[in-house]
Image (cartoon, rainbow, N blue to C red; front, side, top):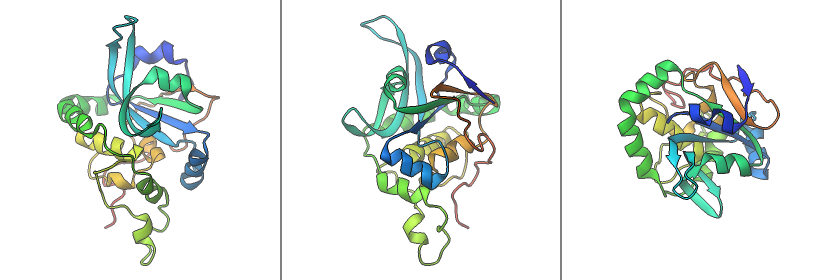
Length: 219
């Protein structure tokens, strides 16, 4: 169920492991929308909440993402308030379900250790292309073009998030390199209610409807 709220009204309810989904308007984002047939073009994950800004004495939330932002490219940690304020497009908050939250809490040390180890690694645009073009993965001639073997020397956005969720035990057996941004949103790991923080009301097609286990694996 989609709701619309302003970020400052709900930010205190966010928790580590929650997903932030983006739907951009750039040329690359429009290509992603076309190939994945979805409004979602990018995902990030909430890392730390209620962090105190020493200068303003105000609190802020942090997200980790593999992206290009403020002249940098790669895995980075950003203030969510700044991302919401500056982003050209739609933004949604997808909170983990109670069952997923319980599993996450049991494994959160492994999750944080893994995610912080990825900080600063390069951004992998080519694998994002391969993950988005799934239709020919099993074709005997063209499958090698579109099917991604897992490679964690560099990351694209949903690949990083999928592996982080797997490290936290929330999903299992996924080929993270085959997971697209909208795939993350469709995994049935979230609460039924999700919130659009920016943009006009836009439903994420297939939200919270797919079993994640062994996603992207070719038997």
